[in-house]
Structures are given as structure tokens and as C-alpha cells.
Image (cartoon, rainbow, N blue to C red; front, top):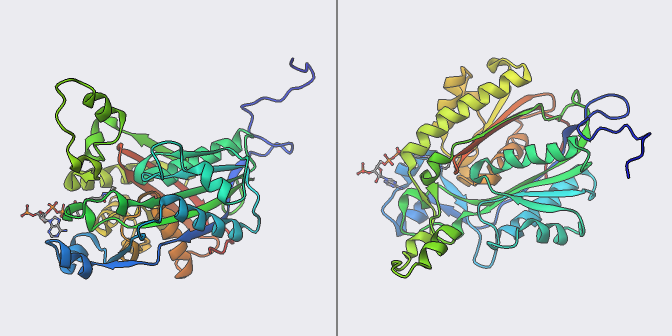
Length: 356
Ligand code: COA
């Protein structure tokens, strides 16, 4: 029964002082598996070269998990570090963005939460491929604004090495494994670290551009038909129409970044660092060009880790802070594009946070 004296409005995101409840970044942690796979190593097993990979993508190496290591393991390692960075192990929601969950069912997040000692907290996966981390931030921030959570652990974690076709040079040279996590806490929109809004979108008419065709209900239901052909083993692998993805990634990330800049009230040339999804250095530079932003504002760590999909942005943030490229007070714009297709952007003024 509703208490007639209770005037709480569930849609009201202001606190008792009348200020908005905004998600504020309070901790950052990352983990990459120790095994480094160089371009040179890949060129021994497939028809490619260090020169082609470096000049077409900017990548020189990536990390791949050893057999037996799953996405959840990387997520736990990054999550532990983010909690340490935030100075508190307390969170009341876990959101895990991944394209490579430990199992098709259940979600990976509940086990990750359990292993982090967060037994009992709500935990769910977000599937937005390379945009997953930005979608995860927006989802977590929504939970904070709605009063559902005070502190949220948002993790992006991937083991793409488990879905790459070792014979496919158009995908195997691009992706790496890794995890990055942030702690968001409820705070004030004027604080450093406050996420200043989101621009999110999708276009499902382009779903075939980035796809693992098999393993889902589409193929399983087709297989039930009496005259169904044998499933192709290649359908278990990740497939990508690289050229088309490249074009859409530039267009969408540029438009989404521009929308986010308008939301934040920032001019493009006032951004200190652009942390775009680390897919290809040529994509990042093309987006910077379209925004009218100097290319040297672009954070690039894909040379070291490749495209780590949902882990890409937190890994890039962490490396940029470690390299002294992002310091407290800097204006940071983040933007991603991925399968679905999906895209998303957000922005913040960098807080005084030490990544682990
Ligand atoms: N090594 C050597 N040659 C390769 C190669 C490799 N690893 N991969 C492709 N090639 C060849 C192609 O077969 C093609 O040969 P051809 O001209 O004889 O047909 C040639 O290189 C050019 O291929 P193309 O696909 O046109 O190259 P590209 O310049 O578009 O670069 C990608 C390919 C994949 C690097 C680029 O399209 C890209 O980065 N796309 C975005 C991918 C991405 O980031 N996806 C993640 C989701 S955002």
C-alpha cells in the first residue's frame, strides 16, 4: 500500500539537496593475459606480414589468453583492480559487457560477482560487441540515476582468441584478449569524473557486417527442419566485412562524438583526449579529422593490445593515464562502434583516480 505522505517520485533523480544523481568514475582497473602474440608470430602461420598489419591497422602485437582461461577470469582480475583503485570493495550492481561470454547461458556477470566476493548483488551481461563498454556505462548510470544502485562495477572483458578462425587473416590479426573495469558511484554532475551524458544508437539492418553465424537460435531452429543442411563448422567463428565496417565505424563514431560534444557543451578543439574504440589507427584518425580535432589528441594503444572489443576503451584509458597523456582535469571524449551495428559515446572531466 502506498503511504500518502510518501512524495518520492521514482523518476526524480535529484537527491535531498536537490542536486542530480550522476554516475561518477571512482576507480579503474585492467588486466591483459600475459601471452603476447606478435605480428611476426602470426605471419609464421598465415599469409600475412608485420608490415601489412602495421600499415593497415597500426597493430604490432596483441595478448591472447592461454587455453583454460575464459572471459570471466579476465573480468575478475580487472574487477579486483578497479575495486582497489576505487578504495572500496563495495558495489551493489555488476554490469559486464562482453561478446565472448563464458557460456551461452547463464550470463557471465553473476559468477564474476560471486568470485569478487559480491555475492547477492544483481549482475548481468550487456551484449553490444565493441560498443559494449559505453552501453554498460550508460546502463549503470541509469541504475544510479534511478536510485537502484549507489556504486556499480562496469567491466568490459573479452577472449576473442576463442572465436577467431586461425586460418582467417582478415580477422585473426586484428583482435586481442583483455579486460578493463571501472567503479561508478552516485555523485554530483559538477564533480570531476561525472559522466556528462550519452549518445547511443544501433542499425540492425547491418547485423551481417560483424557476426558469429552459428550457435544461436537462428541456426538451431533452422537445423530442426527435415531438409536442413549440415552446419558449416566455420559458422562458429567470428566473421567481419572489414571494408564496410571501416566506413560505418568512421561515419557513426564521428556523428556520435559530435552529438556527445553538443550534449556536453564542448567544442571539439577543447577536448584534451579522444579515447575512441581501438579498432584501427586509421579509423581513429579519420574520426578526429571529421571532428576537426588534432590527430595527436587521439589515444592509441591498439599497437600493444589490438582490438579488444568491449575491453578496448578502459584499457586505452588506463594506458593513457599511465603514459601521462590523461591527467586530472582533462576533458576526455569516448566513442565506440561495434557489431549489431551499435555505437555510443560519452564524456567526462578526468578525476583524480589511479588505475591499477
Ligand atoms: N595480411 C595480408 N593481406 C591481407 C590481410 C592480412 N592480414 N587481410 C586482408 N588482406 C588482403 C586482402 O585479401 C586484400 O587483398 P586483395 O586486394 O588481393 O583482395 C587486401 O589485403 C586489401 O584488403 P582490404 O580488406 O581491402 O583491406 P583494408 O585496407 O580494408 O583493411 C581491415 C582491412 C580489416 C584492416 C580494415 O578494413 C579494418 O580495419 N576494418 C575495420 C575492422 C574493425 O575494426 N572491426 C572491429 C569492429 S569496429
